[in-house]
Image 1 (spheres, rainbow, N blue to C red):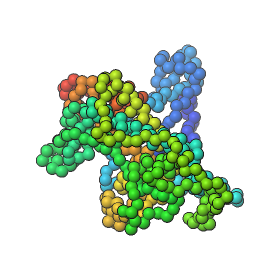
Image 2 (image 1 turned 30 degrees about the vertical axis):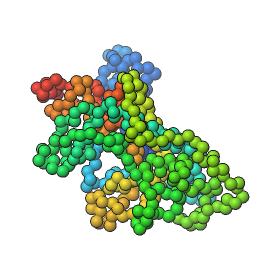
Image 3 (image 1 turned 180 degrees about the vertical axis):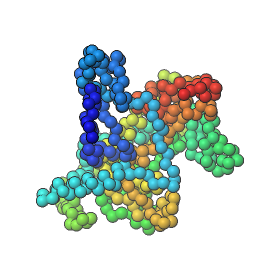
Image 4 (image 1 turned 90 degrees about the vertical axis):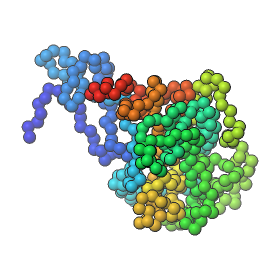
Length: 442
């Protein structure tokens, strides 16, 4: 084939897609197609406005003369897209996708085995050897306190910012009146033609309580099916913080001070710690911890300025919680069932056969464990964002945006809109004033 003789050289082709970042960079995210990175071959972007669009949508700097071709090119891409699609709602009949495809995991395993061939075995790093990751202990305390602060502030904010919940399904709406969209799939929804029956709701509908089994020894044997009722269940975030170093007197856990000694592939023994001094029990519980307030002690903010400050503090606690939990997920293993929302904090899931998802009879109720992402641990309940007009019309549904329920509550409470949520909220989309105007939109 004759090579192309175009005077406009294109950018160099991308490298092989099999060279992917390390595994820990994907923790907390579902796998998606690799995005094209921003490539700039100009020292400045002064010539963008007067440039001409070439083939494949690339902007090219203008040539100095009609006979002299341009030898410089630039590709413009914005990481913060103006508008983004809503998060996908997976059907109950399909399995959740793996965060990283199994083919890629096998390829990386073969590469690690090839690199380790002929070399002495390395000792297990923490937390796999039973020890704590000391640099993450302060982060675990911050996540624990951020969760308590978030719950307490939400209870106060929901006294001034109305939140409605459907009586027949799990959908919620932030506003004085529920939205008019016919999306109810609850009991007798066919008689109501999909309309919601709105009523008051609680904090648990906004900040979903994901629970997990509490492990006294995170490296101990897996929980069998017969002991599923004997092991206490606590919030999954609390269990993650306990395994990461938070000490709670009501939930004791085993703390090793020496690495474990492996005697087999899955068998190990604890090292002898008799030569170490006894730990001071007062130092374990000396860190300051917040407490969740009961409902009768919740006081609503008394002024708009106090409501705005409370909304800003709640939004900051939400971001602290998600960022801190993501850092813990990169070191401590968390598993989720691929068919149901069951979460387990540990390297391998429990053996309780209590999965009731689609076709659970074929699996005898066993869970299909896989690596969890951040949204499995902290589900962001997406709700419709209220426009400036303060009214939603069912004919203009495609023009409205969505945001996590906690973020929408804080925004209606007076907090500024975070930059990361503007894409799904569609703030830059003009909403037509009537259905006739919407039909004219191209």
